[in-house]
Amino acid sequence: MNMNVTNIHKRIINLPKENISPLLKTLSTAHDKIWPNQYWPAIRFREGLVIGSEGGHGIIKYVIEDYIEGEHISFRFLEPEGFDGIHKFDISAVNEHTTEIKHSIIMQTKGTATLKWIIAIRWLHDALIENAFDCIENNVSKSKKFTRWNIWVKFWRFIFKTLR
Image 1 (cartoon, helix red, strand yellow):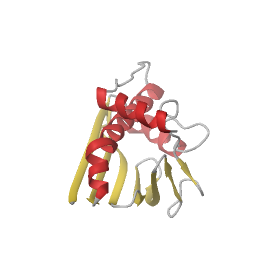
Image 2 (cartoon, helix red, strand yellow):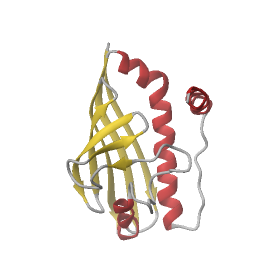
Image 3 (cartoon, helix red, strand yellow):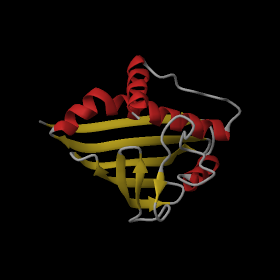
Image 4 (tube, one colour):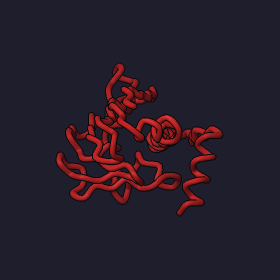
């Protein structure tokens, strides 16, 4: 069973792009201002944020395929088996006072990976990305946001914690 997946998350932040862009280079560092490490498995790359560096988080593994500091980073899935495609993070100016942050997955799932995506990974992924967007916003504004997890996210987090 194969499935085409396009999963896009966007958030508008009412600040200029130059306030948001510097955060991208902190990804996977000791001072990460994007990844919600306190709630999710840390994201790490063997050689840092350079094209060709392999890494990932939890069971998800990928290689950096494209990187433009402060604007864009793109990853190609290596694992789980059956995830064929990319995910990427973009920062773009809407106008001189407003920025859009965007995360996209564009892939085809194959075999049991399709079921894994539908049943569990999609729910966890969506929550993780919204929590990452919260981190970005919390690092550049006075607000302290936290996107609540739905029942499926809570369920799967409980199951995976129990299995450890």
